[in-house]
Amino acid sequence: MKLLVTGGAGYIGSVVTAQLLAADHEVVVVDDMSTGHADAVPAGATLVQGTLRSSARPVLDGGGFDAVLHFAAKSLVGESVQQPGLYWDKNLGETLALLDAMRISGVSRIVFSSTAATYGEPESTPIMETDPTRPTNPYGASKLAIDTCLTSFAALHGLGAVSLRYFNVAGACGPYGERHAVETHLIPNVLAVARGARESVSLFGDDYPTPDGTCIRDYIHVADLAAAHLLALGSCRPGTHEIYNLGSGDGSSVAEVVGVCRAVTGHPIPVVTSPRRTGDPAVLVASSAKIQAALGWKPSRDLHAMVADAWAFLQ
Ligand code: UDP
Image 1 (cartoon, helix red, strand yellow):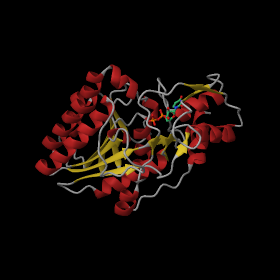
Image 2 (cartoon, rainbow, N blue to C red; image 1 turned 180 degrees about the horizontal axis):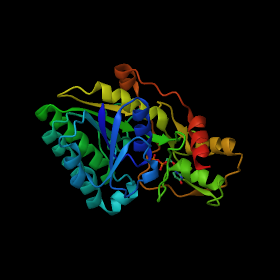
Image 3 (spheres, protein in one colour; image 1 turned 45 degrees about the vertical axis):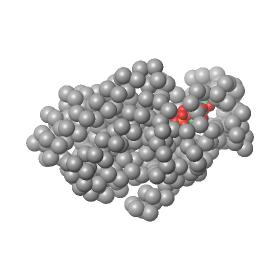
Image 4 (tube, protein in one colour; image 1 turned 30 degrees about the horizontal axis):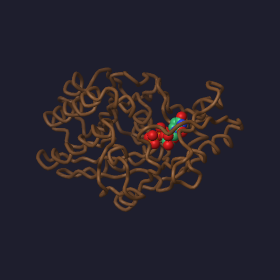
């Protein structure tokens, strides 16, 4: 297939692009390079630098594309609280420009990078796709708005859409991994200590109602996540919008993650217990039963593999 990957110079987009190329698809990446890296775009893909507002239409028009995989987004929760307008504009506004360009160009399939942040504070665990969506920040709200748009575009314009709601993505695939200028995620921050780039890692809260007092999250290897995109792509059906959670169904606490990082790196990794981070729910674990049943997807790499691959990438 001929595919447009938006945000293909970023962490997840680059890994998915590599898997698409390995599966013999033709890939054009559009990325505004605000947080991406040109050298993260796998060789074999064509890179067009630009926003979706400026580039989606010229790239898609007459280009013979079969589908779009849409990763381009702002994705920092704290920044979204400080600058909500930026998140509505870049996430929702640019997606509307993309959907418009797809409709005009007759491209009718899209796989969208949604998020667990659409659910907000869960009522029960593991989280199912049918659970209430009550995002607690503009980042999650903007992604939920896009999911809502996709549902109505599917009904009205015959779009075939799949949203994948990621839980905590981690790990790397050979040369493709996480390289954020502003790093907020746990595993890269812990590994930065092992690399000697920082002295200690802050552990945000040890008084949660969990067995060891630290927050529990559902970590998923980026290679398993990428594989789900290829299955989702093959499953897009005109006029339907499917939403699937993507997680392992298993939770690991912050303290457990630090323990695995110590085991993988052999570094003592000092931890400083700090106050809770605003807006962090105690437990976020996905039910992935729906995608397992519908598409036969199954995660195959555990937390140790995620940390080992992220560690190899950093070195
Ligand atoms: N966390 C932490 N120290 C850090 C970064 C994160 O203790 O330097 C905790 C955070 O409070 C949360 C968990 O690790 O409980 C996962 O956070 P992350 O930002 O990686 O992902 P999130 O679940 O917020 O999307």
